[in-house]
Image (cartoon, rainbow, N blue to C red; front, side, top):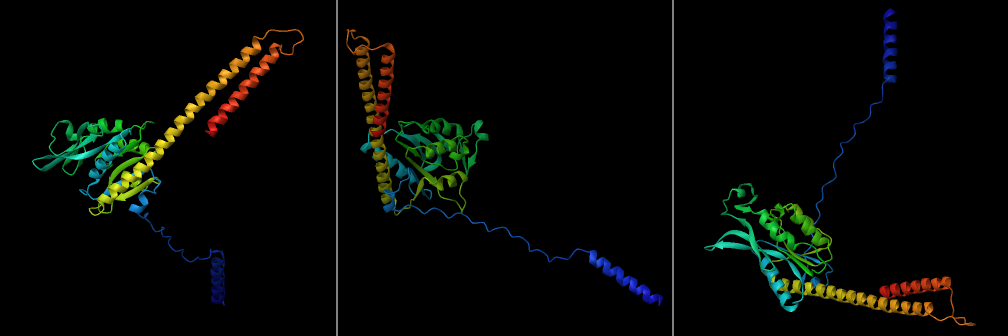
Length: 314
């Protein structure tokens, strides 16, 4: 009997402990991070889409040695011959060779000034701290002294040419912000960028490539002539529209000045007559000073209203 009571008490204690224990929940499945999706590269523009593309930023890309700089310089020369009044700013880069061997690169502004960009034979004390790309040491100070003044956004600039936005140029901390100011402006831009190497793109170049206002032209040995003609036609269309807007703005400004001059002349004539009229007895032409002031205000309001109507409707 004593053993039976002991067993009953033990069962009661176990059931009480089970009642107060929290329920056992099934294990929650491990959360998996969402799959990383890379943005698909923007398709290159076709020859038929070049003239219809509304973009003001033309980016020419292609493998090394395919002729990006040659395309840019030939388009520049053709534009300068066909539109001699254009104000084109920018620069391009070209190889420096000695005995047929490439030993570096140099920066050439569109007005003919040159300066070193990178060299494999530089051995000055300052060049020890210069960044390197392969066997070339990049002269950032020389690049900035030539390229940055050419990338200043001014109202009288019709076109920017930038060759190129690559790894060497992006070592300059001031170069990419200057390029972005040009891209964000309302001025057409023709620039070159390198192709991604081993599937990896330079961050600055990727930002330009994915810019919503940019259109990509991929150059190869089979489409160089068609691309050059298409880029030239695209830029010519943009420059003609820009010139038409500039002419319209100039006409509007001249019309504003003409209307303002005529209205001021009319107001002064009326005020002169009102203030210098001879008072005559029994005449209604004599006006008191308060009435003259009211007429002055009315004429000023009328002139302002006519001026802004002309400015907005021209």
